[in-house]
Image (cartoon, rainbow, N blue to C red):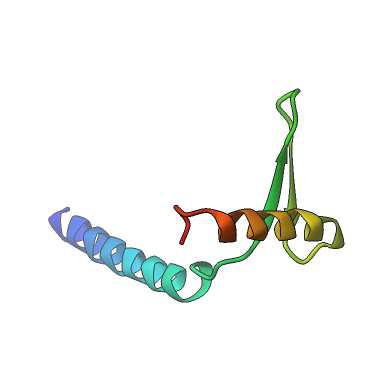
Length: 71
Protein backbone atom coordinates (compact mmCIF):
# COMPACT_ATOMS: atom_id res chain seq x y z
CA UNK A 1 0.00 0.00 0.00
CA UNK A 2 2.87 2.38 0.77
CA UNK A 3 4.28 1.76 -2.68
CA UNK A 4 1.04 2.97 -4.27
CA UNK A 5 1.17 6.18 -2.23
CA UNK A 6 4.77 6.78 -3.30
CA UNK A 7 3.85 6.34 -6.96
CA UNK A 8 0.84 8.59 -6.54
CA UNK A 9 3.01 11.26 -4.93
CA UNK A 10 5.63 10.94 -7.66
CA UNK A 11 3.04 11.24 -10.43
CA UNK A 12 1.43 14.22 -8.67
CA UNK A 13 4.76 16.04 -8.57
CA UNK A 14 5.46 15.27 -12.22
CA UNK A 15 1.94 16.34 -13.24
CA UNK A 16 2.20 19.59 -11.28
CA UNK A 17 5.55 20.40 -12.85
CA UNK A 18 4.17 19.67 -16.34
CA UNK A 19 1.16 21.93 -15.69
CA UNK A 20 3.46 24.70 -14.49
CA UNK A 21 5.63 24.44 -17.59
CA UNK A 22 2.55 24.47 -19.83
CA UNK A 23 1.21 27.59 -18.09
CA UNK A 24 4.58 29.32 -18.25
CA UNK A 25 5.04 28.82 -21.98
CA UNK A 26 1.50 28.94 -23.39
CA UNK A 27 -1.09 30.46 -21.06
CA UNK A 28 1.02 33.33 -19.71
CA UNK A 29 0.81 35.37 -22.90
CA UNK A 30 -1.16 38.56 -22.55
CA UNK A 31 -4.30 38.31 -24.64
CA UNK A 32 -6.42 41.46 -24.72
CA UNK A 33 -10.03 40.88 -23.89
CA UNK A 34 -12.97 43.22 -23.35
CA UNK A 35 -15.45 42.34 -20.63
CA UNK A 36 -18.69 44.31 -20.50
CA UNK A 37 -20.71 44.09 -17.29
CA UNK A 38 -24.38 45.04 -17.36
CA UNK A 39 -26.71 46.27 -14.64
CA UNK A 40 -28.70 43.03 -14.53
CA UNK A 41 -25.55 41.09 -13.60
CA UNK A 42 -24.82 39.64 -17.01
CA UNK A 43 -21.41 39.86 -18.66
CA UNK A 44 -20.25 39.81 -22.27
CA UNK A 45 -16.63 38.91 -23.06
CA UNK A 46 -15.16 39.85 -26.42
CA UNK A 47 -11.74 38.77 -27.66
CA UNK A 48 -9.39 41.64 -28.42
CA UNK A 49 -9.37 40.70 -32.10
CA UNK A 50 -13.13 41.26 -32.49
CA UNK A 51 -14.04 44.41 -34.44
CA UNK A 52 -16.59 45.33 -31.75
CA UNK A 53 -13.82 45.44 -29.13
CA UNK A 54 -11.64 47.98 -30.98
CA UNK A 55 -13.22 51.18 -29.57
CA UNK A 56 -13.09 49.84 -26.03
CA UNK A 57 -9.43 48.82 -26.33
CA UNK A 58 -8.50 52.22 -27.77
CA UNK A 59 -10.28 53.98 -24.91
CA UNK A 60 -8.60 51.76 -22.32
CA UNK A 61 -5.17 52.38 -23.88
CA UNK A 62 -5.80 56.14 -23.79
CA UNK A 63 -6.83 56.03 -20.13
CA UNK A 64 -3.85 53.88 -19.15
CA UNK A 65 -1.32 56.09 -20.96
CA UNK A 66 -2.62 59.17 -19.13
CA UNK A 67 -2.74 57.46 -15.74
CA UNK A 68 0.20 58.26 -13.45
CA UNK A 69 -0.32 55.00 -11.57
CA UNK A 70 -0.07 52.68 -14.59
CA UNK A 71 3.27 54.01 -15.82
